[in-house]
Amino acid sequence: MLVKPRALKAGDTIGIIAPASPPNQENLHRSFAFIEDLGLKIKLGKHVYDQYGYLAGKDEDRLADLHMMFADNDVKAIICAGGGYGTGRIASQVDYELIKSNPKIFWGYSDITFLHTAIRKLAGLITFHGPMLASDIGKVDADPLSKEYFKQLFEPTEIQYNEEISPLETLIEGKVSGEITGGNLTLIASTIGTPFEIDTKGKLLLIEDINEEPRSIDRMLNQLHMAGKLYDAAGLLIGDFNNCVPERELSLSLDEVIQHYSLLANKPAVKGFRFGHCSPHISIPLGVNAELDTENKQLIIESGIQKKKI
Image (cartoon, rainbow, N blue to C red; front, side):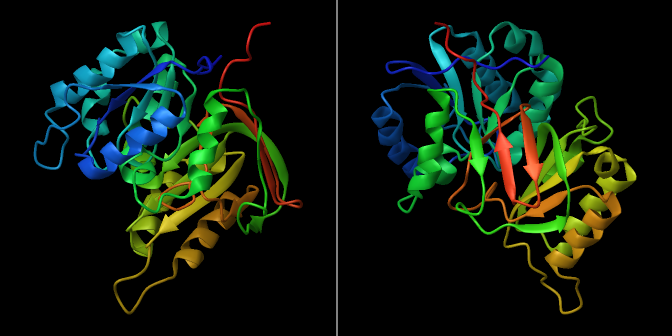
């Protein structure tokens, strides 16, 4: 049984960490006003501004910030500054018992997908797939709708995604329910064969990516297909594939690739969800139950936080 974290309230402190690549500092600083407007206080990880090549500091330092925020009782939520690369390097060193003993909101996407999958599997905690501070919220043109969905952290909120948010296209018809899992396709594929391998059995599998050619998307979806992950899934939620266009003249289109593997999976599938490297970016909890209805082009997702005690 997965655990939902507690809701936030005004005056709470959130921890900000950079467990992957160095965040854009200007955007990160600009995002602080948004956090403060939510009535929240900020605690920065000690290594948020570190740089070690394409990493936001050495593995042990990024790991230390993650552990520090989960161990700190004053910190009620952890929001990642950005993604990039690096969470897979620290996953085997994470103290999952520490996380299990101190469940709290954990928020991010992209490279953070590896940590979402590992934490859900080894600590049993529901986490949130949503826009990050430096990567999204701190940008000058950050979409107001992306910001709006942070409110789900304060009150238990059922998310109803339909075509009022974005156009949706049914690839395979059907009505199905299951736990939401997944995130960035590249990171999902990289879990295969590791202790953190994604479990899709009976679940709604969310996939998204950025800057990958259709042939690369094909390779990763084929890996999931051969590993049985597409067949095991109850349904497919196709998120945003930003700039996933061919760089060569001879190529299948992204749509052709996704259609091919959707047909192989033969499970209810809908594409067009604004999940991923897009604006607006609709944030959702991972690990909760959801219902996909392709006829009505609707996805209903239960709240990712605990109900408040009366």
